[in-house]
Amino acid sequence: VVIPIDLSYRAILSDAHLEAIETGETPQARFAWQILPFYNDFYEPWIGRWSSCMHDPIAGAIAIDPGFGTQAVERPVVLEPYKDRVHAHGQLQPVEGYPPKKIVTDADVDRFLDYFVERLLGSVNPVYRR
Image (cartoon, rainbow, N blue to C red):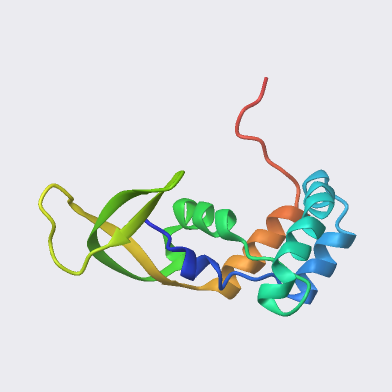
């Protein structure tokens, strides 16, 4: 499953989400608040307000609950070297040697953001116990 960056750029924390994280008392909320100001400062010129995009969290949430994704297409994705990284390009036509991948084109971003913040504010139920 591919989550394009133009989709994750829409996953921007609201002021209410930021306030909830800032005042959260769980270890994960306190940790998030320690790092979020750096992200918010970085994204502020692009977003136009002090907040940040939740790129990795929305991708992880869709992996956990595919229901966050509301629209998807199946297309080949070609990976091409570009400088010191790799660019992925979705193709409109079949490409030999590149089987179609599911590309999520839309998501319930508001539900995701609430889910994300609720997880930061709630108790952690560890999967692994010693």
